[in-house]
Length: 110
Length: 121
Image (cartoon, rainbow over all chains, first blue to last red; front, side, top):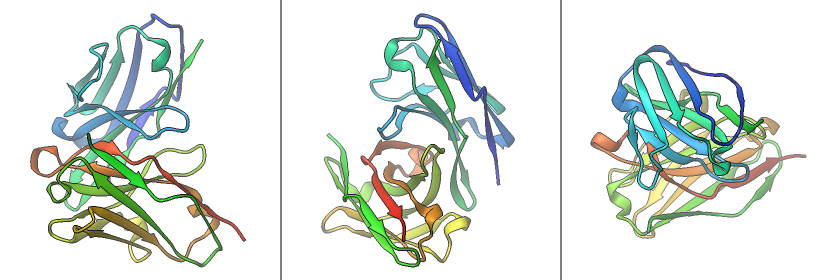
């Protein structure tokens, strides 16, 4: 079973700053099968990025994803007030079909 | 517009079962899959299983095998998740989420609003 480890656990930044979130897999993951979600308190997760680097519908271009193999990154180029939330990476394994999430990174206002 | 609307909060006794529903609208129910993901208080996301409604086939996470049953009713575009032998550790918000097939199988693009299940004696 692939384990996803996100770092840091908490990122304290100010609006306008750049956020760089890491997701490391215990084994190589197909880039096609790596996604990122944003979750705000009391809300369901929202899909941000799929296929490691493709933005979901309606997601602003300040969000970008990159990486391959075991190391993936979500970058928020300039933090807006609404971006302070928890972010999860997720991977899909096909045999058998399973979906695994990282433990999350909280981006908080400094 | 795609919407997944879940049933309301539940309070259950240890050892009992709970069944949560997820009604889809705004899309073609049989063209997608429905997964269930839970989140314990203050914790992360955990995938439990999924169903392919057009086939009626379900896959489950090993952790929940034998305790969870996911079904779907194509006539009402509704998916169900039943969890049995409840214990306090099952207290969580349970989400349904839409997944794709083929090239879009790997991620969840729409989510229900969540259903809080509290297990307490």
